[in-house]
Amino acid sequence: MDKALGTALSPIPPAKKVAARAAFVDVKPAIKTLLSDCFKQFGIECVVMSGDAAERLKREKFEACVIQLGPEAQTVMESARNSLSNSRMIIYGLGGSAAEAMSYSKYGINAVFHEPVERQSALKLVRATQMLVLHEFRRYVRIPVITDIAVVTGDNHRFNATSHEISAGGMSMHTSDDVAPGNSVEISFALLTLPRIWVRGTVTWRKGKNFGIRFDVQDDRRLRVKEWIDSYLGG
Image (tube, rainbow, N blue to C red; front, side, top):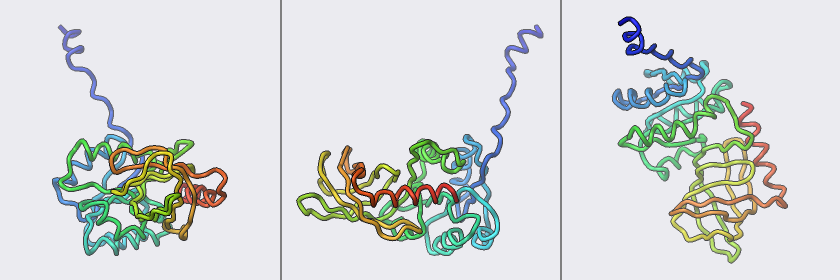
């Protein structure tokens, strides 16, 4: 009987050790509970902040921040990016579209939880970005970041796109304009401490309104992207 009881009551696995902290700013209780569960699966502790968020982010170290996009968000993001401790933290916007998040692009907003927040999509986003939060980098790391991209094709067609991820070798982005794999393009963009840069590339894939380019290895301007990534990860 004791043996049967021992089999039925299997030991409870220990909670994953906290490896990083994410500040929650102006996050509604129901969403806070959902997102906390998602982050907790990867050892990321969520710390709810009150009205002193901007001041705390100046002096207290966090690896990530989830912030409701709205009138107060700019002050908090600016405080974080100007802080020695949090200038390279991963910033998640909450609510709104990627287009709306563009108004915060100068603060290097990395990704957006769209409202209404659904558990599966939230968990997918946390899983895709948790390596950066935990500073566990792959050899060819891709950094999620939202910023405006100006694109010029080989036949001089010009349009704008919104970035999704960037790596030393290329970039993925979103646009409604028509661009097909194999097309040569030149893109320009700016990222936080990286002034506007121009670099050539080739469209390698297209899926719906998303597409990716690989930087031209003959274009030495791409090295500035690698330097920026190295600096971003080193912070």
